[in-house]
Length: 137
Ligand code: SF4
Image 1 (cartoon, rainbow, N blue to C red):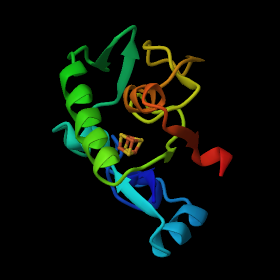
Image 2: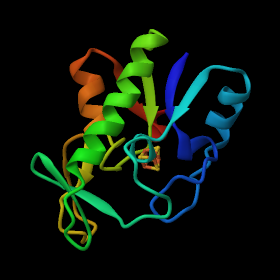
Image 3: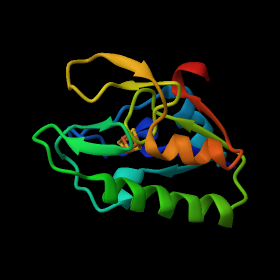
């Protein structure tokens, strides 16, 4: 069983209230290979919601609200599932402030990318879980 970003298998949990469906991952989900999660919604944020970006160790909405706590809570909830189901690999949405792996937006909401991981992806990697994006599947 692998973890997957819920938006990638069709859950309408993205900031804009939409899903980001990926055909291959939907097939894997139907085969029972994936556990879908949305860390931002598990942290208590709604969908739709304001876009968020990381700035250093914190996360802010576009209008400047600090949502670091919500992001941390969501990641903690996901980590409990990772432990419970002995998950060793995750396929997460590229460039998200929670799920992104390798590249994330720079915190200026200008579309500029920098090297880094989303809040959840970073914790997963620290715990030894392999993280790839849907672009690497
Ligand atoms: S937090 Fe992750 S699962 Fe939730 S909408 Fe963003 S990219 Fe998708």
